[in-house]
Length: 470
Image 1 (spheres, rainbow, N blue to C red):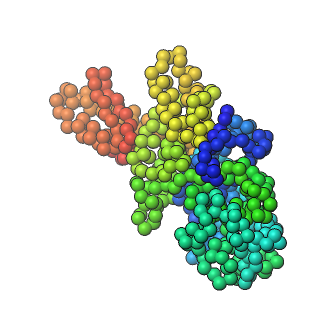
Image 2 (spheres, rainbow, N blue to C red):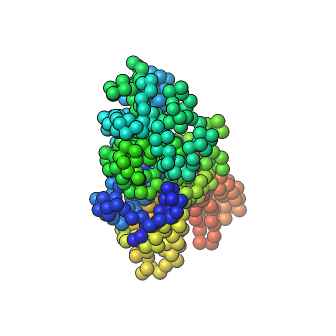
Image 3 (tube, rainbow, N blue to C red):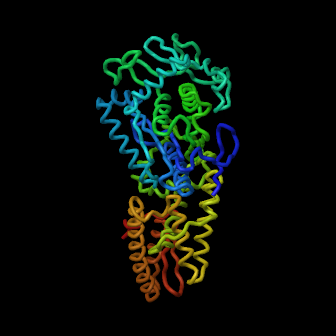
């Protein structure tokens, strides 16, 4: 299967040609662990989880190495420790586990390696020493800074900007010890109450960008296949990573392919605390939104387009997934659908892959009894491939919740049938009307015919509200 990906570095969709088909390597920038992951943090996790699955399918599970790091030393973490009075280690341990739990709830596979920055300080110091020795970095007042002028020919090529344009348009830290406003920190001094490590430039801690360069080189080599992350990391983080890695390693490239997903909005607006539309993945999970629903909504938009999270999309996704779960009760997975694979291989076209799942679900509903087993098996395995319709783990919660819903609906069907039969005798339909109105309010479609009563959960279905009825 030929995979084509749009390379940020060239602006073109290219055939993916790994450096070594038996050792395909991908690095994705992970979180700074000081709080819960918000919904925007989850988008690159879902995007690159799908790519990880696709690469393993094409090249083999053992042939693919996926690295996603944790930044566990950062000024935001120090600020959180000051606010709470808690030890830094306690904060990062807790928030790292929060992140892993929340991403697992979205159906994301764990990467091959999940390095923590604090475990790679010696490698960072060694890389900085190399940059200083090569004249690409310089010490100044306890800091070490990358000298952009030393690599001016290459700096800005990834994000498509000149150094002069970046100075004019970027928010850069102004400091008297910088030779150039765009020079960025590789190492900075630590006070006695801050975490720090010994180095040739005194006790201190690494800058943000050097972390990923050192961890990627250690785990994947000087040059690897794919580097990914959110579009907000393109500049300055990825631009700086690329500059320091290429200078330190003496290579033309850090990664052959750079991939960036677009940002997330909520109800058409940028997510922010000031607008009151900021929420975490855990907020949604605690509100009863299954992780599978969050994943479905994210996959329904192409990774290179802005994604708009809306309540309507979530409800529609929940209704669709409920129907799909009903289709695969007691089904054994088969061989995934080739049309779905073709969509994913075309620059991770997940909306087209989801559309194909809709087509397969429709075919199942319209199929003859003899055709259904093969269609059902293909549909389930295709859904499982993109992380939907899980049969265990977090999906078990969804299935149990759905089973409870079905039991509750059947109970109300029986109640409605009894009320209707009584009304037919007494000609008093007030109780039937009351129940019908309450069911509709709970998001249930009430179908009454000569054959009887059928209750069907709609997009607005709320089992909790239904269970509260008397």
